[in-house]
Image (cartoon, rainbow, N blue to C red; front, side, top):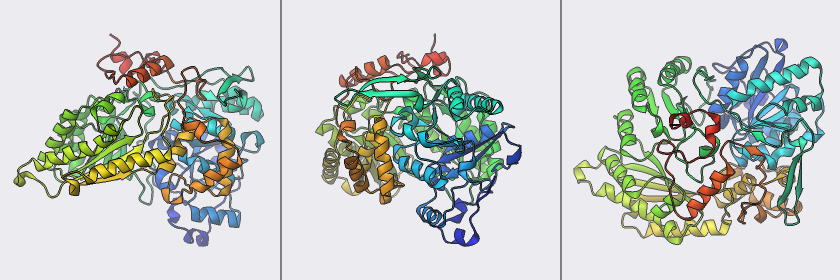
Amino acid sequence: MRKTALTHRQLMSVEKPARYIGNERNSVIKDPDKMKTRFVMCFPDVYEIGMSYLGIQIIYDLLNQRESTYCERVYSPWLDLDALMRKEQIPLFSLETQTPVRQFDFLGITLQYEMCYTNILQVLDLSGIPLYAKDRTEEDPLVIGGGPCAYNPEPIADFFDLFNFGEAESTMDAIMDCYEACKDKGLGRMETLKALAQVPGVYVPAFYDVTYNSDGTISAFTPNCSEAPAVVKRQLPADLKGSVYPVKPVVPFIQVTQDRMVLEIQRGCIRGCRFCQAGMVYRPLRERSLEELKAYALELFANTGYDEITLSSLSSSDYRYLPELIDFLIEQLGSRYVNISLPSLRIDAFSLDVMHRVQDVKKSSLTFAPEAGSQRMRDVINKGLDEETILEGAKNAFAGGWNKVKLYFMLGLPTETEEDIKGIAYLSEKIAECYYDLPKEQRSGRCQVTASSSFFVPKPFTPFQWAKMDRKESFLEKAAIVHQTFLEQKNRKSLKYNWHEADLSVLEGIFARGDRRLSAVIERAYRKGAKFDAWSEYFIPEYWEQAFAECSVDPDYYVHRERSYEEILPWDFIDIGVSKAFLIRENEKAKQGKVTAHCRKVCAGCGAVSFKGGVCVETAD
């Protein structure tokens, strides 16, 4: 295979050339000529973001453990290198061997957020791969997508040959085995895709036809060949014990967004927040064993030399062996000056006790996510957190030496009222009051309560997937109400309020619930120059406004209407294990402000028990 490497002159002309040179510690070097399958894994954003994602490290490790497979990496070139590659006609290349991406068997693209969609086209374009799957030939790699955004693949379906619905540990070996068997038989591209379509969890968009009603809703979504199943079922390991874990992760030369060891303690969540897609699609909760985690932590430290380890999960407080794991990490790594980071904690006595132990010397800010300002709204979203617990947690935190608290909220939630909106400021003020209620001699410097609000985006496979989304103007009006209410509070000098960009949120909502008619819009925006849309300083709304208009697609249709339970949704052909009946029940309970207990208290009958693993087994009796 022909190799492409940047010259010294080219490298020195771009920002952070270490993004593109490879050869990092723990990167895998194999002889490409001895491999049956070459797979290049892409995170469609800048290197520093992609290198922080555990999922790619897992896939990289899993595929490279196969004797017949070589997995390499590629990321979106930053704007300076993008311009240079186009000017000097340099094809996009892998980091490990500097091989042009088009020469691989597979290009795998992880889909972590909707605002990376134009970067997918950037990667294809710079690689010399036709943007649309229908235009590709035997000379092009198979383009496969996966990740959370793949649970509605339709807005980008035309750009992909296939998607993987499931977790890599349960799907990638089967996909590679099937591909290699097809290769041994000398099968062409289309016959290989037909074989892959029969692998559980694989979706080949070309093998399905979509028709629409006169009002724009979907009338039918049907397979057009016998190899394609009518329903594609998500795949996952029911038990994480003994599964692949990257204890020798690639260590970058430059600082990246999450520059630390990552120890995934569990997967899934028991809480059932009604806005949270991850909490639904990663069900059931599956914990890693304490002994495995102890071994992983020591291996990670020995193989990386990082001075921080973060415990990764959707809700760290719910890991049953967290105290024992913390004791071990403090004993084994604390003396080596390794900091322990604990994201995703709840604001309760247990979590604060844990935080006290890992931040005993230097107390940084605490971060919690009440999500809504009023108790009524927290019940609607099934947050499972009352105001008394929040304020008690704040009191204990301030008494324990913390003086900075970060709070995360959402605006635009279903059934939201002005009183709920103002509640964000009221709750922040009450938390600040907890600090000033302490005797002066017990206070630690100046109190700072920083509240941030994002705008609610209805996501597929959540109880709110049918909900109407606010318009940009409504979002901004609500943020203005919150901001004004903050200014009226007694402790306003200790309060700070930030809010997300409304344009980005609305576009995210369009893609989150969109269909195949959006692919033309995405391509048009890309051709106009849209790239790195997730970076607010490079997001240009006018590109998208023009693209929608030129493609005669009404963006309001996708976000500013409530869907009926009878409507066929673009992702209805996917079975994630959680039933639509459960999502409807939860949506109706939300309208009534009724809460659902978490999975360890009582089984709510979501359907994930069909996987026969995790918390579903624990609560089976």
